[in-house]
Structure formats: structure tokens, C-alpha cells
Amino acid sequence: MTTNLLAPGLADPPHDAQRLFRGVLEAFSHPGRIIELRDPPAGPGTLSPAAVAFLLTLADRETPLWLDAGLDKPDVRDFLRFHAGAPLVPARGAATFAVILSSSGDPFAGFAIGTDTYPDRAATLVIEVPSLEGGPACTWRGPGIDGEARVAIEGLGADFWPAWAANHALFPCGVDLVFAAGSRLVALPRSVAVEA
Amino acid sequence: MPDTDIQGSAYNYAYLDEQTKRMIRRAILKAVAVPGYQVPFGGREMPLPYGWGTGGIQVTAAIIGRDDTLKVIDQGADDTTNAVSIRRFFARVADVATTTRTEEATIIQTRHRVPETPLRDGQILVFQVPIPEPLRMLEPRETETRTLHALSEYGVMQVSLYESIARHGRIAKTYNYPVMVNGRYIMSPSPIPKFDNPKLDRSPALQLYGAGREKRIYAVPPHTPVKSLDFDDHPFEIETWTESCALCGSKESFLDEMIVDDAGKRLFVCSDTDYCESRR
Image 1 (cartoon, rainbow over the protein chains, first blue to last red):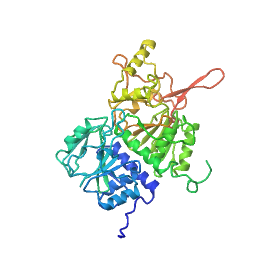
Image 2: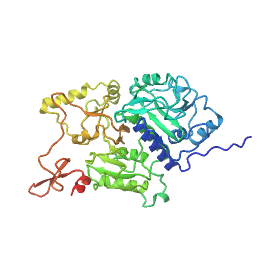
Image 3: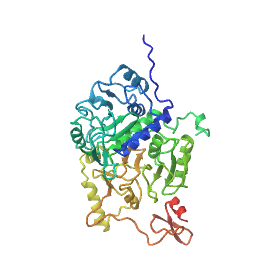
Image 4: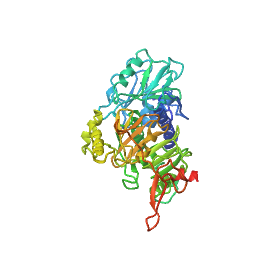
């Protein structure tokens, strides 16, 4: 029997979750704005603190979670099962939330996009990237953005932005994204058009 | 509610349990991602009746924290029963600072008005909504209105506005005036006077709408186009007054008409008490 201790979750759940959620809400309200989360939990180490903060704030037993093969490690599974209680699912289509590595091909395929009558029943995908700055610059336009925003996320594949254009074209259906790097995140709701 | 400090009481911070808050927070994020679409949520029983702001209170409870400063208005006024009781509720259960000053507030919960003072980036306006479905008076079936939204089939609303012109010579709707959000969804702005509709358009503040009885949450993100429905030959117009406020002299704000004596003497005063006081 191993005695590996589980990484701690939120120290003060009501207040920590509230503070972290307001960071996530600001990110969704201002797509492209880089949000530095205040005191995110460290988590098991394989996930970024921003991704851990997002999941501990929003995932629970009602939200099936899908993990990228590169992240699907026993310490991550144990951590999320214990602290969030979210069921880990092997099928993308069953997931409410997912954590994906930026290097994965075909990042959105198979996730729930909602329906015309219930577009809210769509997945939110957390994409782990090396940095939120310094990559190839794109122009983002849409609700929450005053005119346009220049965003330069690093580490995305060549087919990423064409795949996003296809997702945006599904509006009001489609997945929503959160890019996570360290303790910072940027949100990209389906309503936003990206010009690469 | 027992008159005890929140620390010593059996309630969670901000009244709702954490599971409920997470559910509401997920609904809020989807509402922001699809502006103007009404997201169903598992509305809870609140310690006040439907019609008193249970939807707005649940939204506020899911977002509020100890760093926030809360303002609550009812018909523009900070000192009416609904506003006072909701402000006291959150001061007690969320240990939060309250204010009547629009500029100082980080969260403003409102019933039936948008403050006259322009809002800024970082502020959140929470609306209390009685009937979230703008098509409900035209089509009573939920399955049908849901399909109309899915297809963006809004002819029935244009026809109702046209009928108003045919009958009254103008669009006679003065409050809860329907708007088109980001060119996709028709949305009820809640029963604010149409005077306030232009303030919703491209506002730098985040707008969240909560309907407790109907269990719906919807949102308008900052800088999002919000267009009041109209016709080319009958453009949207807001109310105007020949009078000015009897207390502060404002000619720009929304005025309430008051009868001040038995002889029927009338007085016009600002509906936004904070705006009016700051000008006196």
C-alpha cells in the first residue's frame, strides 16, 4: 500500500470558490482578457493551477468530466474524484467539462454542442497551453469585447483556429473554451469570432 | 430568520449551499456564452415569496463575496421595502458592505430600473425578472416559444408591435420593451421603462437576469449590441417630460409623477434616488 497523500483542495470552500468563480466570470464576460486567479489551489501538479481552480469551482457530481489521455493519471483522477466528486467518463459526448492538452489533435470533435432548443447543454473545455501570450496573434470579435481584442495564445495546432471557426458557425450551439496556463486563464465563448 | 450573526447560524455563506451555487454559476457562464438565451436552472425556495426578487437574489447569492459592495434598488429607489429587505438580507448572510451610491457598488441588484449614473467595467447589474419569456403573452406554450427562439422566428413579435401601431398610432409598449441581443435572441429586459433600454446597449457592465418563479437565468455581456425592436417608419423612442425634477431640477432622468395633496397637485421627481440626491 502506498501512502501518497492527496493534494489539498480549496482551503475555505465558500470563499475560495466565490473568488475563483468571479475570476472565471470576468474571463467569460471579457473574452481575450488574461485573468490572473488569486491563490488558486496547486492541485496534483500535472494540471495547471488555473485548470484545477476551474474544476474545483464548477465541477461536481452532476458534471461528468473527460480527461485527455496525457492527463489521465492516477493522481489526477484521485484528486478530482475526491475534491470535486465529478464522475470521470471515457466518452467525450457524455462530458460537461473536459481538460485537454493543446497538443491534442481534433480538440473539439465529439463533445456536446447543445441543441437548437437547449444550446446551454454544451460542454466547456479547459485547454492547457504553455502560455497565454507570445503565440501567433489573432483578432477576436464578439460579445464582451469592445471592438476587437488581440490574443496570442501559444502552443495551438495549425488546425485549431479552422476548427474554432466551424464551432463558432454553429452558434447558438457549440462548445466554450477556457485556455489555462499556470494560474492564469482566458475564456473563449462560442459567440466570439476569431480571425487568425 | 433568527437574529444571529451568520458565523453562529446554521446557514452557509450567502444563504445558498455550495452545490446550488455551483449549479447557478454554471448556468450563468452558459448564459454569458449565449447572450439573450434563457438558461433553465434549478431555482430554490428562498425566504421570501415569488415576485419579490427570488431570481435576482439567487444570482446575487451565487456571485457575491466579502470584497463586494452591494447596492439594491427597487423602481430606482434605495429606500423602498424590497430594496431595504434584500440589502439587509445580504448584509447579514454574506457579510458584505452595502451602499446607495451607484459608483461605489460592485454588484447592483435592481427591480425595474437601470441607474441613471453610467455603469463601468467591472460592475455587475443583476435584474429581478418576473416573466423571462418575451413571447409568452403571444404564445403561451413553452415548447412553442422554445422552438421560435431556436429558429429565430420572431415574426409574431413584429406583428404584435405592428398591431399596436395600427391601434394606437405608435408602439404603445412603455416598459418591458422587447430587445434583440447581438442580432440573435429577442429578450425581455425585465419591466424596466423603455427609457432605460438604450442604457443596455453596449454597456461596459455585465448584465445578469434572474427569474425565480420561471427558473431562468440570462445575460448580456459587456459591449454587446442590444437593439430595441422597431420599424423603419416607426423608430424606437424613449419617454420625454416637459417637467423637470422638483427636487434636483434634472431634465435628463426618468421622472415619477406624484400626487401630493387632496386637490390633486402633482409633482415630478427623479425615480433614481441616488442620482437625485447627488445633484442636490
